[in-house]
Image (cartoon, rainbow, N blue to C red; front, side, top):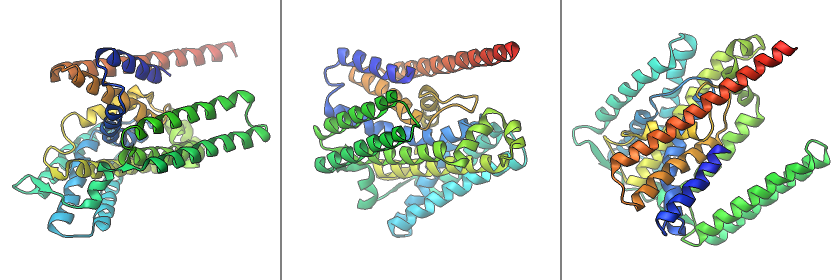
Length: 369
């Protein structure tokens, strides 16, 4: 809720400073800008839920982007096969890091810091002396440079609304939820219909944003409604207790880093599509820091065991919204970095305070018992 409230405050503030902030065209561009950060943040969330951190996602994203560029441009490999190879490479390298962490017990900070430097070296080696590879493939470019037709957008909105309402009705009929639970489908309906209306007022739903929503829905279902997802939260909450309960802690940890590597590769794919090239700066700069900040701002705890994959979307929208609003105000780059730094600091501070209160509440409850 603090993150959602922050989004509303950001929208009101920057709209008061620029009449263009809440226009359909600017909101559509903002959604595209937030997509890459959200995808990297989504991979980071799986690791943060364990109480670990992955510092290699930016360079791994750039390295897999370089692999895609070499396969398509130099190797003339079909685009689908090239994408599959880059995704497999990202997943395998993420799992490789997870093996060092889970089976050898080396801290994730050390392993992924080494991975960050190693993947950056591989990226530069793959790109060669030129440092840049142009990717001329219309199918890859279409991933981020197209919009869904308005009619398709309304059809998708109707499908989502019916699915959410029907699910709630079935659960209510079974006695699993109360009447107040119908507030969720109402909120989802208003949000989805409103978003589709805004996007259709411009050109339609941006394809990268739609893909991001699809990834979020799938990962949300996995983390909330499957045994591996529940085990992920259990390990992040208390690894020793989870082990004694029969959870395969090492496998869960390795799987989390494999998923993290997969989403780093997806981020590399989107970067290649958006930029039309693979270069030495792909995956660099502040991308990793923005992704970690987005995950924390959205509500995922740095201490593990608490969060949701939707944090990636909300946090990325906050980060992109602030950057976009400051651009409309013609603010300098140093100001943008300082403002984003303050936002991340406040989010981490809030997370720490909430965790301390929860810990005191548990201790008080145990004392009373």
